[in-house]
Length: 254
Ligand code: SF4
Ligand code: FES
Image (tube, rainbow, N blue to C red; front, side, top):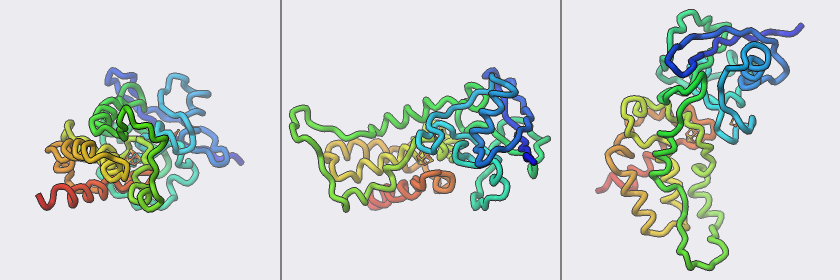
């Protein structure tokens, strides 16, 4: 017999007229939360808005809050969501009145926290990208540098490897500092800065430029060491640890 799953989904046409809609649909083998949202779009309401691209936890587009935890919708299965072991302990985000949520039997789907909702589960990521651009996340070559490539040894790569795999999903912006301080550069941005200032191919000049940006008041010093970013990151980037490393290396002894 086919089993059903119930979802309670945050809806907001973009004008603040918030409501929660209930849907019940049949579970197919291995069905992800993202696939459940497609089912809703196809069978109940084609106006439901959400982002996705790769469906394989690579593009970082399908970030949303699922049962009060920021996750990638394509990476979590509806059948195991309630039973999978969760070690994440984070503050609850409030998006609207969902007092009628049946916690045991319904999957609650809401947008990412600390970002403006554009429509339903689609948030405005522009502040995220603005701060990302500010840390200049790229290497610079001289215009007349004709060397075909800048090589790294495996050992040099190892130093930055963990940080390279960030998919810019924005889940780590669930940080309480991002909530109360709109100027805070953000965990992903600081982790990315750490990736570049430790890259063996960076010039001293560029390294100093990035460091001087991230040690400003709204950068590393603004982090309050909640380490929620470490807990929600789907790629084990550990941005909080990267921020600590920057603090230890570039601020602590000054
Ligand atoms: S650090 Fe982790 S949670 Fe933050 S944007 Fe990168 S992959 Fe996503
Ligand atoms: S759709 Fe690309 S990460 Fe989920």
